Image (tube, helix red, strand yellow):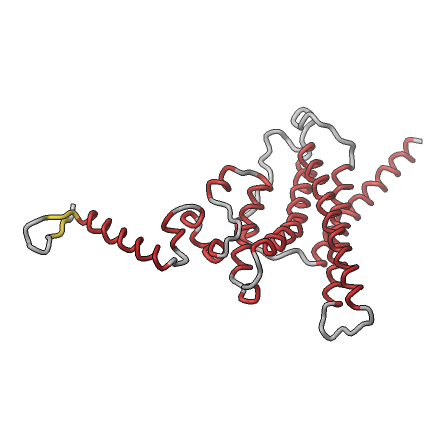
Length: 264
């Protein structure tokens, strides 16, 4: 162990005690100044997640590493996405006057948009794996249920993006269309309804995935890059996924019809 002599040269003090004294003095000083790192030193979410200091400083809801580790599946991804998106928003100077409740709403909407491709990806994995009947959950569902829910989710997602595009164009300062305020209010109502429809569709797809999944399957295995990405799928992304499922179901229908004809 390393030691340090006292000022009078007689007393020997272990270095770790010196460090402890310095730490306590620093803590008291920071506490008086109310530094953004005060909470981080005192403990809590900020201690575990110093990389999200902007969001924590603005009193945004943040998930601790303990909460995230106790979660699984989509909920775990949602909590991780929430932290990254929250920090991104709180780092934007244009949003510095926004209250935490408003930012929570933005994050929730962003997660709803992020959730669609995650569900579609998981559904496609499930279709490709084709588990045996003895391996699946007890709840059974009709053939084609998964694809129908994928189509419904993507269709509702596309509808939301269309409404949002109209709303963005109408909010343009250069847009001087007559009755602009009333039209904006109408589109905002339509956007809220579209978000509700999308969430309902997503929940139905989630349940369809859960019902058809193998008991031993590890759900929603995605890379850290996908989790940390706060970008949302574009309209082209959604249209591409929708086109793929429509072509797949169309080809399956054609195959079934040709099989029925040959049986006759």
